[in-house]
Amino acid sequence: MLPGPLTAPVVAWLSRWEQPVAAALLIRVLTWVAGDLHLEEAAESQFPSMRACFIRRLRPGARPIDDDQQHLVSPCDGQIMAAGPVVNGLLVQAKGLTYTLDDLLKDRALAARCVDGVFVTLRLTPAMYHRFHVPDTATMRDVRHVPGATWNVNPPTVQWLPRLYVRNTRAVLPFTLHGEPSTMVLVPVGAILVSGIVLPVVPGWDERDRHAQCVVPCSTPLTRGDEVGYFEHGSTVIVIASRGVVLAEGVATGQTVRMGEPLLRRVAARVPLSPP
Image (tube, rainbow, N blue to C red):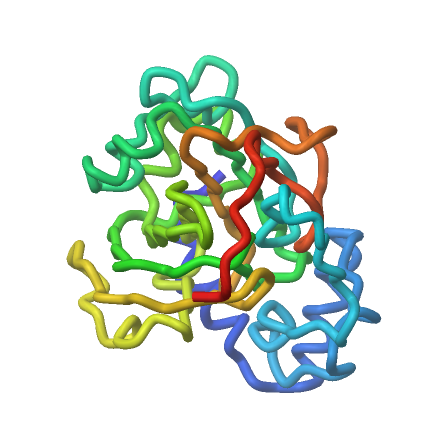
């Protein structure tokens, strides 16, 4: 197992190498290794590079969005690495390993709003669809960039390296849910590729200092299922919701979910209001 800083340059170079024949060969190898690369769902059938394959869009209808308004849907395809209540400000990384909301979010006021909430950690494998979406109609508030390492987020590393998610580069995306006071946070965690988190809906995100913690002002209304961003390689999205939200029925560690499927459920009825 090699640390991200040693592997990142090689993986980055290979993924961005625009040579269709080499890309086709690398994709064939990825399919053989990963076994779950479903390119029949992609909007395009050929890719000039591995990066183009990683960040592929899907054909219309490939990810139906659950329309039960009591649900918050999964923002991405992913394996559920951990899920449950936030107890005493702690989130579970793996058996015997925890980390704090304060360390993850780097925002005490935001962490305080989520301290009695619920969380789900979703790992995107390299073969999965790499884009992530908003779980419900909401307004995305000021986005925080937290620099860090690029450790792999595969299961062996999760089991071995304490506080893995707070060591890695990440973005903190707070949302005000429409029609209620609840707060939801998405935390895309980078891995392998340096600065591999792309957020097209956040003005000025690409111009930030990638080596410094900073806040990018944002007040962007989004509709349930809208795309928020994408990874340039497989990684992790941590979903956090404040009090009043629980895990959806059947959601448990070890399962694989797809973007648009139920992930969390409101305890109280939602107040119907016009869109933001």
